[in-house]
Image (cartoon, rainbow, N blue to C red; front, side, top):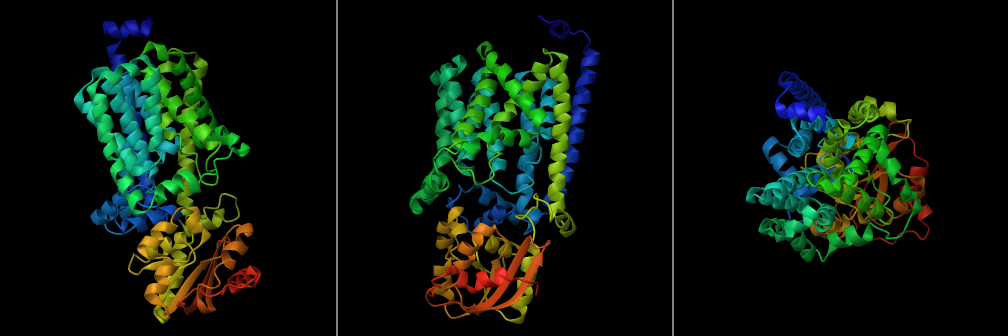
Length: 539
């Protein structure tokens, strides 16, 4: 037994231990409050992320589920706006609240697994980890999903130790919330299953009635998902399991560890992997090392393997975040019995991680202002999905004041952003863009009758104002802009907004809603929208 443990058991050095504990608690509280203030400032000023705007649009059509996600994200946005009114904070405050609860769950996990000081240190590391520290700034499904995974790990830790009914119920509730949030809840279940199958303490849980009760409660979270897929003919499952994933090996995904190192900051990432290795070696000692090792491994390794064959076109660095959370508690505990090198690496890694969190929030703060976006316009880090939406809506509002018309956007993302910026006071339709299919939104646009078929059925022959987003990858322009011809009758260009040195560009066309689809030109390069975009100049 080490001298530190002996002094603790005999009660020696209690004043110094208490003083040290107070310092760590104070440091956590100061960092937590400061970070929360920064997150609130960003969340109240930054325009919705493209997908975030569509989740807001889903919240205006309450349902058991949607073609891209289970219902909880939309339900939370609905609740947020019912309480605080329409706006950025109205939409985001539930996610700010849930994201801010995450470090407290990590603190509780560390306290339960080791001791109070470890808990506060783990909480500080959680705030420093960029993916976790910035959680809640946007109304995204990863916020409730990550918190649900953290609560499930904490509840399982307690349930395996004490077997109390309340802990098994908390575990089942957390798993149900995960299923209500995202299909990636399957990875939470997989991590738990690995622990229950391969850890000695885990196998013993199968004989406890509490485990089966928690699994039954978790299954309730699948009910809305099953109902929505039944009503939508499996659209959600088809998108998540088939349409968005090529299911073919792509070697470029081997860079995932590098992506994770950048997302976590390199030194902190190395420290977390070291903690996983050390926890894995100690898994035979029982609690809490078996749970830390199997939960960490159960997220990180399957996500890496899954990433080699799955969707590599969308941002995925946040996928393994739940697997890092138990490691954050293990790091300070392991540092006490390790050499000075790892203790120094943890301190420096935590400081650099905290700097990374602040840098990320600073980047979003720049994206929240036109001046900041102008500063980023010339860089590869231009925040295209956060900027230009206000300006596009202002121009549309001006044009609609002069001549009212049905407002239509060329894709789902622009339609959702316009409707949000216009306070939801008028419906915005979307053309049948390939982007709608790529992101799994086409089925629900059809259900809402906000696609071209719904547009023609309700507004055939009426005046139409079409907003076209012209800023996109060059290789996509001909296909996307060339496909618009046939969607509007007698189009004429009436305005164009070119923003941020050409990084964002919106063209506005007046015309009429056709009664039936018009024949597109044989050559997409002859389409008016493509030709105008190629010769675009500010109007």
